[in-house]
Image (cartoon, rainbow, N blue to C red; front, side, top):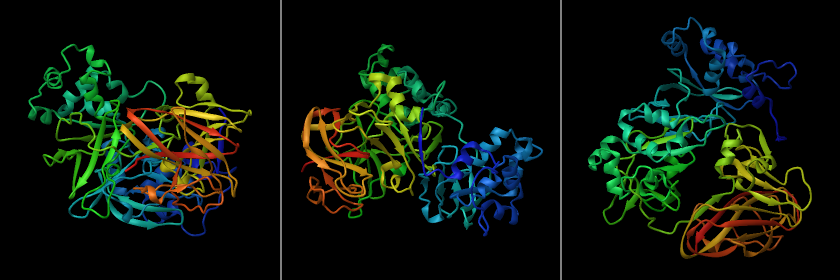
Length: 551
């Protein structure tokens, strides 16, 4: 597999390789005080010893670095050594010692105290895991609810440091492990096993685990609904008592279990779309793993609800256990069984064109926010591996090195900073080449949608790249030009009258342009085939398509 690496910085190579042999690398140690030097000069000798033991001291000192470090004080490190019967840091297994350092390190972004929102941090650590920073009524801040932050916003030349009073425990458990280890979740675990959905949340035998969000119903909540076992749940759902039938995707038992899954790891903050003009948030509607079934999320007068019912003025709410981090996603507990409910409205649908599970499994850097260098990952080998099952199918007119690739950038690079999740589908198909893919489920009842496209074109000026869009083999709008180097983006709540039709090349383009491609009418809820045809040739980065119901 060949890779195009863009903007390669030494800091990334060092953290990923965990090697401190820098004699063949080019970097600059700042004349001012970088992070590791500051720690050595200010009494954090135990963490410095761990950095030196793992050969990561110079890496953390790189001037090219851009880190947030959560540093345990000496007392915290000594307590960890004592609890685990280690005479010194050099007694820790080397691989695990490196894991500890990397788990306490976020590369590629410097946070400050004002960035903490009582939730999961958006960027991953150097291990690819996420951390939570929460605060209590006393104003104390905690990382992963286990370590208190004692000192904030210590600025060095290459990092921002936060001192904590306990060593963080790297996440090693998968979602299924969490279910297995909590007796209060035993019935929900049995439900996943009975529907064969447990395989999704167990540690994979090989490869990278897919990420899921799971809404767990505790035994006590089931009990309050007079459900004490799977048989009672099946009766409630009218699913029948044939346990083999429960594994069928159209069985009510399977659909109910799958309804508690979202693809991807969502924190509680991800569910809130704020409306600054109202005491309520916008309704966020997300498709579950139960096909064509959706969850609605909304905040009303400071109370957060799932599937809020306006008639009863009630809905499902989170229990205290939320944002529980796992190697393969996130767990939230809920205060009701959360039965399947039809959406109360026809929602707008944002379709990220890179939102496919196979990419998450096959590409280690998939949406990895801790990158400080961009990656352009050719998808040809994956097409060959999966054949017709691969989500992207394409035809290129001229033989090219990488006609379709997965691009993942950073929050600061000149391209990736514009994209949702810092990633995009990069196409360069040659004139009249095309790529096809299947959409997520779109709710419809003879509904007409405005269709918008967010893209980025590497051409510095017109004419740019000319493309046409087809849905279910029907042309949407007309051929248009994605000229210029500015991206097209949408506001959070786009208004059709503010959108700009695109056919003209000389149109003014800004970072917040709203482009409409055309309109399409869907008669029923379902998935649709998208075809994007390249009418000129040349790189174009496709971010997402937005379907907004026409009022």
